[in-house]
Image (cartoon, rainbow, N blue to C red):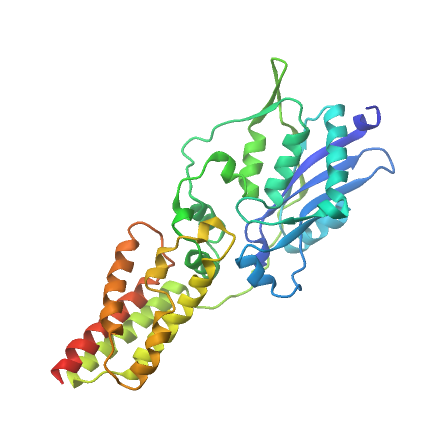
Length: 364
């Protein structure tokens, strides 16, 4: 216990930077022995191999394995200093006995058989891991202050972190289903580093009839610097959607006047919706609970691929009648689920082509 008196344990909250993997921030633990040559380590549950085969596919399907790593604290800060991301340090008010328990837990976590864990972005990530191990070593009970007027869904929280990355937001909204739109509990909100930072600041430990603040001191490990933002695709999803809609309307009007259908446009729409449909169908097999029920699959499914050849050959097909029904159901579904920005446009373009392929062809 005497040794533990000189140890400080802190929660480290790292602000996001411009790299895709960092858009939501990061959390780690600092173990700092204040003796002259004492250990000063950052325990980081966010270690992964981005070069591993099929990393992105495994991440999307919820099959990503992350691991706990311990590196010198100054080295941990280097990346965030480089990117201009602020690192906030909250010193946790632990007793010597609680620090000892945490020491045992961290060493147990570092054992090769325990180091790797199945990562899940919302439910089991670097932030929840840090929270859980701290909670597990405290002999009293942590009481979190309720947040007033803060009732976001998972999608709301994702949106708050991707407001400057419209295409990342679009991709998330395309993959996330209706379960991402339900209101979250305070504990569920703590998957996000900035939410756990807030909750720790307003939490108390209750033990033997007394309260003490969970956080006894707050410091800045790295001050906020200048962030370099790389330019992404210059057009937003909404602008792209407006361009596609304008093209669709021009083609529809031309078809109506000339009493003929532009087959190339039909094929392009079918390939686009069918390709997105394959991705959403594969997501049904993902381990992420929030993607399993996605109403966008009503319209975006592999069905167009089965009718593509008859449409190319100009044969009579039921595809357009089926698609008209699915497009209407898809638009109704948007009342219950937030869809990816601008994705409605493809439904409207398809509806126009459904009309053209029945009425215009019939008139001809």
